[in-house]
Image (cartoon, rainbow, N blue to C red; front, side, top):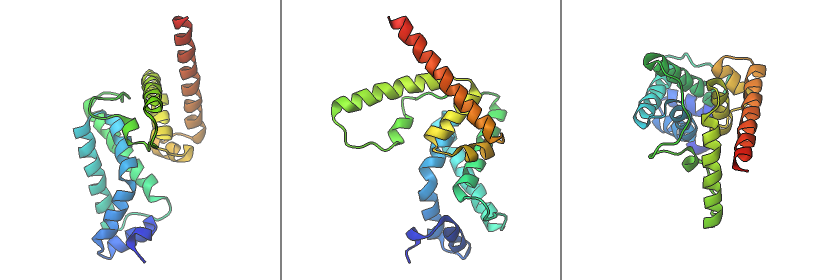
Length: 193
């Protein structure tokens, strides 16, 4: 059986037996999701690269020391590590997250894009820009849940574990984020009339 067809748990076992290719497959399988979530929190490519590297160094060290338990999903565990490292980074720098695109990175560049015609692409780009502007105006706790749910594609259970709040709190933050975004859209439509 090819290493590519193994589950995350099987890849970890293979890696611990000395198969470096198994860890490479594991890293490549979850790279985009983890890196994107880190970048969305730190908003700096160099810092995101550093944290991403630190996350995988910590993962390797934890695996080699035999301290990884197989109860949870690997990606959920890796996302928790990356989230904690992002929080540590903010504590060091004493600032909160801000979700906005930069000249060099746009979250919508990493999302799958079907072959669309130019008009559809332009409409999507305009919509994405408007959505990002709305997300950027949300309170930090609501913005965090929106990022984790829609950009990092995490379940509410994963979000609650990662942010160390109850599922109901995570759901409530998403609900209020959507309410706030609807209000902002309504206010903008009113101002445009």
